[in-house]
Length: 266
View (tube, rainbow, N blue to C red):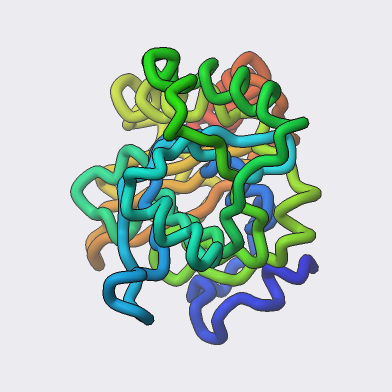
């Protein structure tokens, strides 16, 4: 058991008589969400109103340790706040929240945001421009500089009842899920073309009878579904038969699982 699961809120785990289904640690899920995100809400400490948080929309890049990199101007209020006090937090949320934003994943990074050392600016510049091509028009302006958040702590929320703290060390040593770049496409495909298959998978592997099933998340170990049942909406986690590392392996294991589910129903 990882420390992220140990630090999970008491009483927030799924109410089920079924064994726990393996899934990535919160640290990995936080890194994955940060990797998929492009824009967050940066909260700095206000100079004008001491003690109050000041929120800003903030694009970011991500270095190989998952630390956010910002390109910000001295004219911006958040930059002036950071120059006075480096403490800040960055909230990043799942892009596709559907009709239920509180059920979506989100992560809050807490840390100190400081100017990058001159020796690291060239690498940060290349990384940032790769994600934000239009920033080439102002990246070299004198009032713009690169800053980086050195992470102190992380709080991850994976939806209703799934939340917990992740240590900076755990976050630093984790990697994004191998399906990160293809998650949205897989989910869209399954929900658009294989809704009946999802109902069958829920019946076979989650032991839940439902009239409608929607895939809400997927990773190397399995996926989450939201199910419409006679007793109302509920969620379930379904494990893959084996770990997957790419879309082709994901498709293969899903086909095999659907075949098992349908052969049992016959």
